Amino acid sequence: MVLQAQQAPPGVVARGGARRVSAAVAAGGLSSFALLYAPQPVLPQLAEAYRLDPGSASLAVGVATGALAVGVLPVAALAERVGRRRVIVWSVLVSAVIGLLLPLAPAFPVLLAMRAVQGVAIAGFAGVAAAYLADELGTKRLAAAVGAMIAGNSVGGMLGRLGTGFAAGPLGWHGSLAVVAAVALACALFAARTLPKDGTQDAPEDGHGGGAAAGPAAVPGRGRLGGGVWVPCAVGALAMGAFVALYNAAGFRLAAPPLSLAPAAASLVFLSYATGTASSAAAGRLAERFGRTAAVVAALLVTVAGSALTLHPALPVVAAGFAVLTAGFFAAHAVANAWVTAQATPRTRGRAAGLYTLCYYLGSGAGGTAGAVVYGHAGWPWLIALTTAWLLLAALAVLTSGRTDGRTDGRTGGRTGGAGRSSAPRR
Image 1 (cartoon, one colour):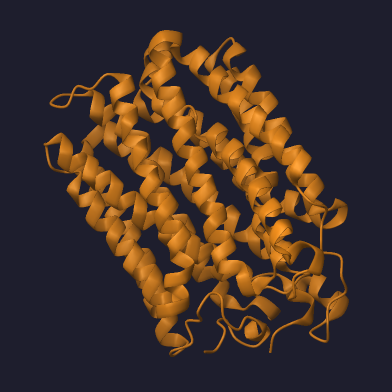
Image 2 (image 1 turned 120 degrees about the horizontal axis):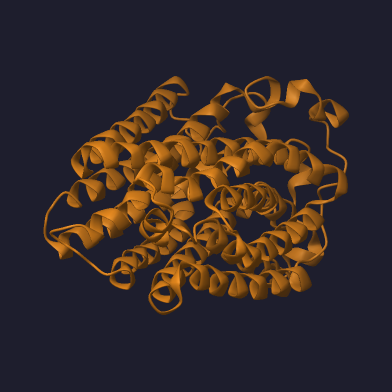
């Protein structure tokens, strides 16, 4: 049964309103993810400036993603009290202002402290945006809407990394971070002015449970959402850990012999995010057609295949490998993200999205740092072995879940009302 409260509000579902929501969320995602990963292309420069090894330098990324993970559930709870729109607006504005101040940090520990605060601020967008989209557009369109949002996020990540990488040559890492922060602030201001007010999130629930949904029984893993919510969360954590580990070490790999690329040339690897933009936008449609189990497992195997290609010594093959693994990762992420959110009722939607984001960025922080340490001590082949193990473990979890539920792996855009009785919607 489809929850009545999940129907999109008439004023927003209209074509112009939907475009406005999409444009504002895309701008917020571009700002947030450009800022979150802006230091990644200049990790070798940070390591040189502060005399750090690759694992220590990667903390400039890992601290921010870890802080995001810690902050996402409290921020999601705050959003249910003060409104998701308000939290998103403050998130994008505060994170952009901190980005402008980041180049002024006098020492690496200060830079890490500022990155931690910035990560908590970005949690307001990362942990709330999917639930906000579901409120405004309805769960029937959720898979496609989340796919489009993640496509916007990948554009932000790509442009932020490319901007930092290219500006690092003439401006140094300080100036390159400032340039990205200035662009992010412009996008944040656009989002703040354009984002419509909250639609249905405060509407009372239907017969599925009123206020009880907000209590302990509504916590993912117990009661309404079911234990099956942990499977897409595991996919998010393991896949993101592998993905960030590979990209954290990519700058070091590309700058070292035999490739020996300059920072600007090495940053071109982030053009691979264009494949992630396309694959995440298409992932929802593929899940609706073939089922989410097949879609996620196929995406994870594509990621494994792409990472294996990067073992080749030839630059064109390495570049192709990054393009393939990026496409696979973003497809898996899009389906897993929608999988979690689609199971939730309007009252628990924020908690479900927050739980996924928590696992996703815990994987990013822990996996990214662990991968950089493995690369620094053992080299690229051992890093590929480690990330492949994580990706295959995620695929195994999805396959096990699919067998447990029978053929109810649930097309992400399908019947979500049954989530209260089953860990996956029935076909």
